[in-house]
Length: 407
Ligand code: PMP
Image 1: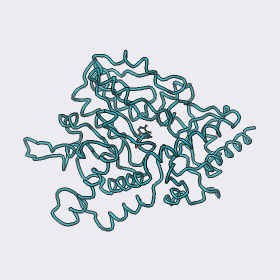
Image 2: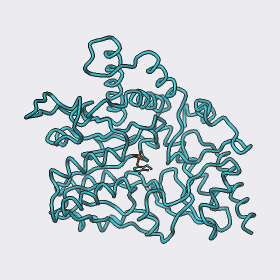
Image 3: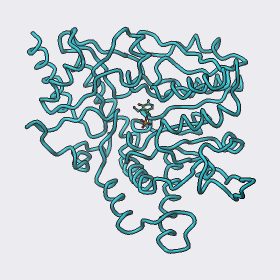
Image 4: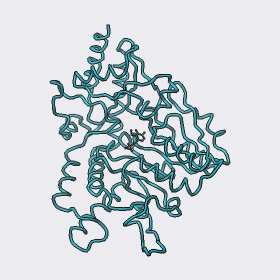
């Protein structure tokens, strides 16, 4: 882990240095949203203090600066995921909007009654509900790649599920509920062999390891700024140009048109065709700052830190009596879903909160995963680049307290 110093990293995140409930804060909920380094906060403040104006149409200096910052952020995102062209980067509100955009543009154009949409059993609701809605709108059918008891996809079921009616495969790169890393490159290879385009939900991936969309070969890749240390309200849909170019617009309004008469509208080129209205300019600036922050640390170093911490935390949690980890995929990201005896996860979370420890409890917007494991909810600790072994030790101490309360 050359050059990666978690103490220095922690110092960059002001929110972490506070007491809550009279205890030092231990933040283990980064899969829900990650904290922001000072560099991101500064970039947003600087934008509003110096450069703010609306983009693209202005002739004045501030509009020029704002446009440069916004389009510069697009180029920064392109570099981060190694897209071929910055025009393949569409700014959206987040992963949820990115997937809805594909469902309502690609989906409405190419998917009809009796066609099949293939997803997996470990998707976040954001990669289920837009497709279910499309099924209801078009009469298409939702097909599901099953999961096994480790939380891995059952790959031997995949080929039979890819039929001549399959119009898209929509798959998560990392499960937010289990941490499973899916073999997206292999799935894309198999889908493309049958002419099926692939959308990847990368919300939990881009924050943990390097992502190269050209290497993966996928057609669409969606992620959210706020989970990768950037602001809320901004996210990205990457789409290969040959996929985006023929698509109809998503929403109508300013900026997405070339000309408007009362009789006829001609639409703007990609990516502007998909960005109706004033975009989240400061959000894009903040996201670009988050990317520069990650690039300075190095995504390989971030990945190594996460993996070391995951191994440490897995071992530490397994030492807690009555604790069962849900999701033990061989390739896993730094997410630990667990049950403690028969104590309700909500009680676990509430007692940990009294110790200043933030975890998430519930179904994690992945109810089908909970249904598969026959549990209504789990407790989930999710780790990020600013977490330490001391954070994990605090969690373990907290869980022993929970056990004492329920003894
Ligand atoms: N997919 C996954 C795997 C997620 O973890 C999340 C957020 N929990 C989403 C999609 C949705 O992201 P957002 O709420 O930022 O749109």
